[in-house]
Structures are given as structure tokens and as C-alpha cells.
Image (cartoon, rainbow, N blue to C red):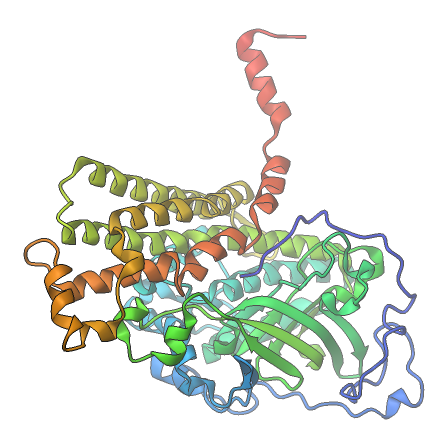
Length: 542
């Protein structure tokens, strides 16, 4: 989800001069030759460097369709844990199937609607998913929104690729700016990475949200310095990364992750200013799968299609632990340049906060479910029902309208790509922290009490209880009990079940909790200018 806290959050807490020499190196850190800011001892220089292996160098073929994408997920040998057990081939585990399907939908829409979901790039010169496209015009930014809403309508859940898309675009202009000021070659490296991703048509996930520990302190003030991802070592070939990222959406289904800092850093925190691309199956990475409401149905009743509510699609979140993970310099795009962390984060939030137009797509699904239930209940003609559906549409279109406004008002950066308008992007995301909850309330209202008292699927198939339920749970003429059940379970799934993660809690905290948007809105609202408008009209000259 990538929640961003107030960019002004910093700490002046002291730290050691080297930034890392007070941290004992674990046995796993045999790939460290030189510490990040001071010379290593002769003993440390004997540590062995891990190999650098990427999805491309290991021979992954370019992905052309959904079947190719599914095949690309196999054989990764993730160090992955789920419900206290180490997973083997996660593609074959029922709990992960719906999350994979949601990502597959991003490839399917590329086949079916290439004008919406595919793009041609000046960087690679090939057709590729819009999710890996660097925006070249205002129309490109708007097209992202069109695609996102359609995928929300298609899946009814988080389809997991927006963070990566927005991280790529924010990194594009930031690396350019760093090079212009510092004389580095990050942008050249980044272009090579993007060209590879587009040519292979791969998935890039974004990894921004650190655990943060004590929110009253920045990275340097934490009792445990690993509360934020940082560089702990360096070789002549690359850097070594340690720490953790949380709430990471779709990373298991990605080929790369773009690891980014998540907030403003102080001068003492340069080791935390790391922007790097890592293969998701790089040695030293551990994944811990996050729980979701109602996930036991997916774990143990995956064949129970009706009670799942949305049997085909779901989101997917993991905790990611980086245990001294090596990254070659070719895939390091910021390394200690703290002055550019805030621009990177702000640009990312400008993209990502208007990316929440996807919630309008999910809201479209929920509006359709509520309207269908009104018909099934024989209440569709009631004026108050019609008015509640109008309210749902109003809320959805407010989300979509502010997202599209941000995209249509995009401005070109010196690097050449286009960044959405900050004010409208933050207003959009602030709407999203509220409106899905209101939409869900109306859907639950129109669904009726069966939403939370509907018996188990087995009771409908039992020789004694089945006929009784078929008799007494009928709705309007022409409505089957099974269809009522299916629609009730869908509303349950989206408002209190597995996919309420993507529709409600993610709407609150993803891309920053509400106060994060209010900080930006306060910064941009220009009250003095608007006081001048009022005084001029009122005739006040002093």
C-alpha cells in the first residue's frame, strides 16, 4: 500500500560517524567487504560476495500474454512463510490463487484493450504494459487512470501494480535531477533498467513503507536502526541492504521491486537514502504473508465458490525482510543523496494518490451489487433506494473526478515525463479515505440482514436444511436463492471480508493516512492569496 507519513518528520538524534560501524555484522553478511561509510577491517574484507542474478540474466523469456506471466511465477524458490509454515511453490497454494489472478488481469486487459493498457515507449521502442510506461504526455497520465478504473471494475479488488508504476515514474525524474546536480550516472542506469523491464514486459513492485518503530523518531533516532531500510555494506560491485518493508502489495507476483525511502531524511541518515531495484527472489529476502479478513475460507474452503464472495480475485500483502541483500551498482539509482529523498517521495505521492481512482472502479462493482440486491429483494422501485444508489454514484465520481483532474493538469518535468497536479492528487486520496466507507454503508443497508446471517454453503446442500432454506430465503419473483447468496457474499467480501482490505483499510492508509494529505493541502491552499480575493471584493484596501 505504501503509506507515507508527514514529509516533515525528521530527527536530530545523533548517530555514529560511520552510520553503521556500531552495528555488529551477522554471519549472513559474508558479502560485505567495506562498510557503507568507513573502511573495513582486514577480517571483514574476507567476506564473500553473493552473486547478482536477475530475471533477465537467468533467461526469463519476454512475457507476451497472461499464460507467459503465470509461467514466469514458477520456480522462484522464495523464502516465504504463510500461517507459520514455509511455503514451497506458492503458485499451487489456494490462498495465493486469487491474488495471482488479479495480477493476471493486468495482462489480459492488455490483450483485450491494448489502446488502454499498452503503450509504446521512446526508451525501449517496444509495446509494453502501461504499468511499466514512463509518461510522455498528459494523455499518458490520463490513460493510467482510465486503465486503473477499468481494472477495478473487472476485479473488484487491488490488482497490485500501481505502486510500481508510480515508483518508476517518480524515480525517472528524480534520477535525472540528481545527475544534473551531482554529476552521477543514476539516470543512465535507470533508463537501462526500464528498457529491460519494458522489453521483457515484466512486473515491477514498489517497496516504500518502513516499519518506522517509534514514530516520534526518524531513522537515526530508533533504538533498532533496522526499522528503516538502509545500506549496511558496500563492495566494489554494489551495496548491501538490510531492514524491512511492510504492507507490500503484490510483491510475490512481481519480478522486480523498487526499494525506496519513505520520508524526509536528516544529514545523519544518508545510509537510508537508497533507491534500488532488486529481483524479488534475490538471496537474503524473506517474505511473510499477511492475513486478511475471512482468509480461512480461501485457505480451507477454496472449493466453496459462493461463500468466498469473490472467488477469482483478491489482493495480496507481505512483510519483506532484507537480510543483507546484495544489489549491483547497475541497479542502484540513489545512494546517500538525502536532498533528493523528499522530491522523490513527493512525486511518488502525486502519482500514487490520484492512482486511487481504482477505488471508483471497486465502488462501481459495489454499486452494481447493491442495485442488484435491491432488485432481488423487490425494493428497486422505492424512492429511497434509488436515492441511495445516486449517493453511491456521487461518491464514486467525486473520487474519479479529482483523480482525472490531477492527471489532466499534469506538468512536464525537466526529465521529460509528466507529473500529476499535487493539490488534486491529495484531494482525491483524501476523498478515498472517506467515501468507500460511506459507499460500503449504503451497500450493507440495501443488502439487508442476511448479509451477516446467511448460512454456510453446506447447509444449502444438505438434504434436510437445503429445501428449508430454498423455501424461506426466496426473494422477488424470478430471483433464485443461489443468485441472492452470490450477491450477498460479494458485498460481504468487499465490505467486511477478504477484499475489504483493498477497498476500505487500504483506502484509509495506502499512499498515506488522512493527515498526510491534509499537510500537503495546507501547504498548497494559499490562504493569503484567497484573502486577497475576498478583500478586493469587499473593498478592503488596508
